[in-house]
Image 1 (cartoon, rainbow, N blue to C red):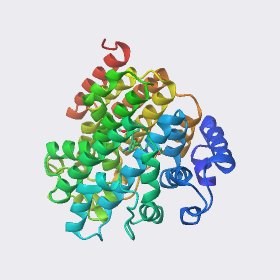
Image 2: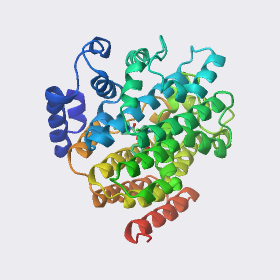
Image 3: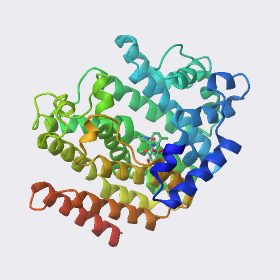
Image 4: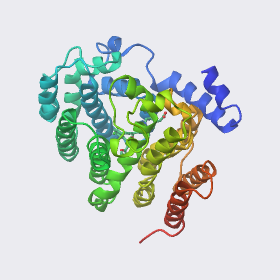
Length: 382
Ligand code: D3A
């Protein structure tokens, strides 16, 4: 806690938000005991809420501020997808069994006897799968509309993950398709859930293009940020069509983090992710409900803040570069509006331009991108 506060020392509102959130966590939301010990004490719904806070602390706080009915559906959706992700990430899992399980996981999500032992590289993920029957029972308590969306997206995502378990991300087209399966479909599913809740317009679920971009922007940010971690777990999602212009091997960058070629590659990856931001602006403008808005906007602001730190930063190649936790705390605690979100986007768009030498191709691309973004921000399309 002290190092986190220290990092936000020059941002008093972040310090206040961090202290408030910690206090709130101690009193109400975050269970201290390990998930394994909570299993026998909690009913299905309470177990799912506890599992959510364990597998994603700050994101759980954003989900918990949604209205009750939608909150439960999003909680189940998140846990089902986390379980799928855990199976995809488990490098010890025999490949053939893994593919079968990924393709059939949507069926298991409707089977009250389904559990999986010893899967996952993290204690909380393993417990989640060992007690997956609890998730299934909570899933079954949801309204039909929500259940249909969760099953359909899980089916498509599991099949997409299985396809990519057998092939590498080589082209930019592969990269977009992989990100569609693992995050674009999340955006599509969530838009369907928002519409089904009645809190958002039925038209939202028709905007698959914008919903997909919401996921692509988040996923590409994670993939860029996690370069180092993924390289050392023998997983790579950076497309060769991009990195192949700068090196013969992806590991070149970690060995030569300050080489202008390494930074040029990183910056091209960031530029590629930024192309999704104008769609994100259009999507966020469609939202009417304040808590749905906050839920959708907070990760996008965190993502652009992450890209701004990662951009042109050699440390991306040698460790994990992160934004201050204080920013997340501030966004979670104070009512984030559309106007403030757009101000964050503008602020960070200036950071990218400031960090790029003038009279370069990249500066020209970024200027054009910033102009498009500003047009969207100042003159919304009808
Ligand atoms: C695209 O998915 C959306 C969305 O679409 C309309 C709306 C809200 C949130 C998400 C999305 C999400 O957000 C997280 C994410 C990144 C990649 C996939 N997802 C995802 C999975 C499942 C659901 C929703 Cl239900 C963002 C995320 O996980 N984080 C981590 C914690 C961060 C915020 C971003 C806060 C922090 O402390 O850094």
